[in-house]
Image 1 (tube, one colour):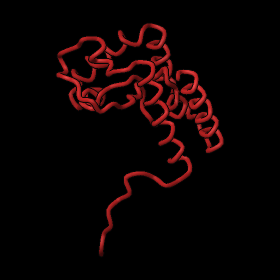
Image 2 (cartoon, helix red, strand yellow):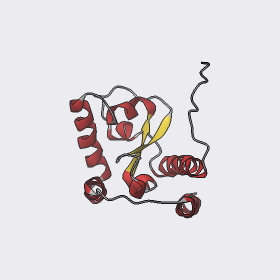
Image 3 (cartoon, helix red, strand yellow):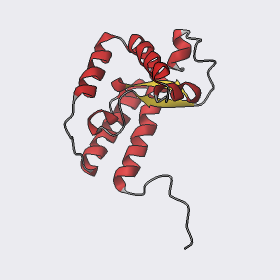
Length: 143
């Protein structure tokens, strides 16, 4: 049986909307932060930054309720993004400890509440499109 390569990205409307949300969150954080949070904090234990920026969701992307909230993420370079999901528990815990200091008490408390929330929050394409419009508005206001 001939096998074809798997598609790297979904083609559903929801998948396309989430991809757009990810791009908007990245642009918002570039305008707000300007650089990798590790570099801004002067942290050297994770090594030097590279110049490929990503939006790091502090809580898992599988939770719809927090997926599109700019308060629950930071701008991070590709090299340092690895440490958030590191297979080594001590690296992951150190990353989270340092990022909590960077985001401040209020956002860290929000992150804790989201992490503790075990409810399902189903969302349809209409909900995702409303979020896209709100994020586009926020990006315009930052410009």
